[in-house]
Image (cartoon, rainbow, N blue to C red; front, side, top):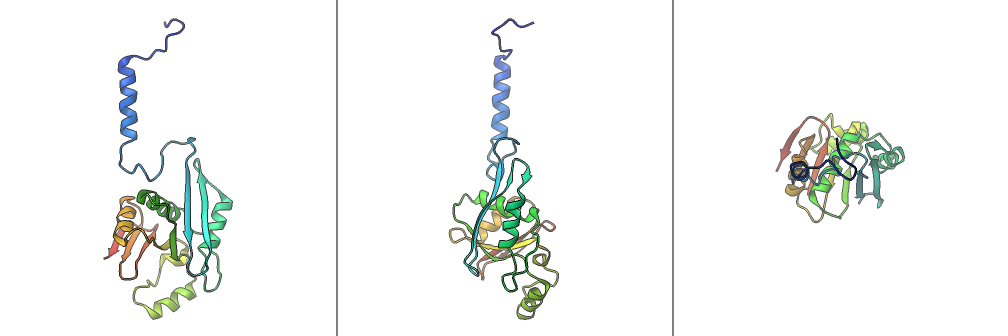
Length: 189
């Protein structure tokens, strides 16, 4: 039985708590997302479109919950700019893009080159390039082609691959990285 004023903490207990904190704070994936719920955790995407001139700075997830208004704004931003078709973007793809950005430790927003593509747009692009997949994940809202001025294709791809989720394509000649929430795989140079 403890007397009033005693905390019940022993030196061994304090050292154990400190050791657990050290393990949680280890650098492995530390900058991707916090693992503590209720601690003010959020996920954010910062992007601009060279095609439309639009900018996006949106918190879309707070303390374990997706923010519907944030997702709506992201869906609109990721639309097929050629025909203005909007499609729901898979949150797994958004989470992978946001985690990659946090791992890169940059303030610069992504440049979105391609988000959602209607099947018609994808067919048109496919007729012009062998690098466009027939069943592209862009056509189902599961992919984005991204660029950063201050990070190389290799740096972005390494950060995305470190997340161990989805497909990561390096397109060094065109200076962008494809990120999707499909099976884990990578390609390109």
